[in-house]
Length: 237
Image 1 (cartoon, rainbow, N blue to C red):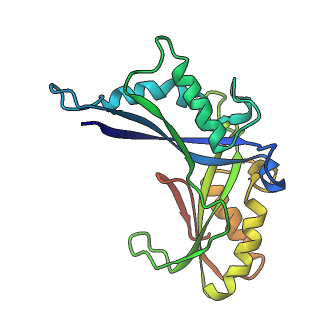
Image 2 (tube, rainbow, N blue to C red):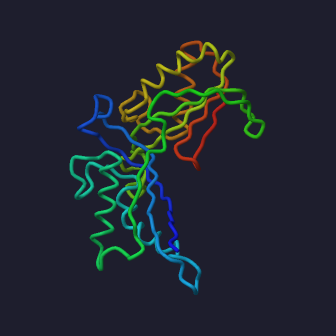
């Protein structure tokens, strides 16, 4: 009996897609999910096909190159920096390791965590975070944090599939503003946006608040999320 396993890893990376449309050709970034796949019979002793720690060890040198990196500059990546191209590159890295791939290795899957479109959703009030009802949407962008030390990974060019949430006095009137906001930030290098040359979550929240306040949007709260584990909420000064 054969079992099929997967272990997910996450990487924040920037790229330009020269074969994509005009939006995709701009410098931008994504949050990627990279799954390593394994299959085989369960060994009678430990009761598993492979220790998930071995999958982690197999992926670690690959992740060090991809995470907080620029895909177009990866050695051997070539012109195809799509999800299919990154998947091919990950496979080549594993297959070229000394001794070849392990016998249980079955491949890799790469997906982008973001919506890749303007898909606003209404979210109820959150008692836990004390946030009123709001509208959430995602955007894909690259950034670097130039004020950090050279050794910090966030100083390097990288990217995120961001989640943004905005609460306002009138959510029905907020939608058109958010579409313009999306077009301003999506598939961009945030450092080129005036006021976002050092785009921490905190600065993105405050910048968004000020951008909406200048349009009398009745903003009450702004949340920005770089990854599922990194989130900031701003309630104004």
